[in-house]
Length: 222
Length: 122
Ligand code: SF4
Ligand code: SF4
Image (cartoon, rainbow over all chains, first blue to last red; front, side, top):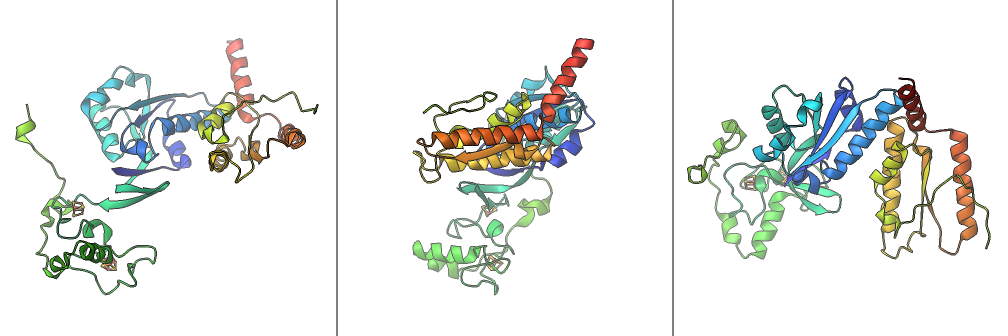
């Protein structure tokens, strides 16, 4: 899923201080699971902002709403009839949701309430880690199901590099060397023969290098 | 055991302090509470293992936020005691009430009063 992190309250206060009617808009998907922008976080942020401005002697309207998703037209339409009650929206969705809402409501300032971090997994309670960078041409079949694009600092495709020490990457002793993980897993799979095959040059045009990416599916278009 | 405890606070019973969330604490302050304390079982004695540890973290989160917005993190506190410690419960309630008296009313409560006066005058 998409992993996001709450922005510091101070930053959000700075962004919204000049608006009088603010809608805090949460999203029920990824950001709910990673506890950054779901209904609960909407309630907390709204309460904190209300109290902050109240203590400053300012009367502001802080509304709360959480949509099923902010990256789909139909859910974003659900706020069309209330959006004019506000001067600004703080969206707690990932960057995709914020932008999609901004495209839909052209004259409404849309402010991000979270920092979108990566595509990752919930490794443990309170720990989310990156697993994929959406490179557009997945190589996991060859690498024992471990991604060298997102998990190797150098995106090395025939690793490891010389910096791999005791299973750790040279960038930090807390970071596993992706290629050590790949080798360990290929061994477990009895596929070390695959390791000996030199990976061909990867097509990076499907990655960010090729500009913004789109998926077009004629078969599902109506 | 007849113990004297202050009468100016309200007890909200929870099945376990692990039930408390930061939003419950914030809402209390938003509604004008001057202080709030959570009384959990002794650490290590939670029937659900970590309920009181969760509560402590949430109290700490709330304290940080309250500090940040100028309400004052010292208005919220977590205590731990066992169910047999009635006198300690009384002592903690007195301690907390005295502390809040020292701090005075919460800025939110004062703001609410100002607002309602303004509304009355209008
Ligand atoms: S190879 Fe590309 S698509 Fe596959 S997991 Fe890694 S970044 Fe994601
Ligand atoms: S040590 Fe391993 S993970 Fe780090 S850059 Fe080298 S190959 Fe990649």
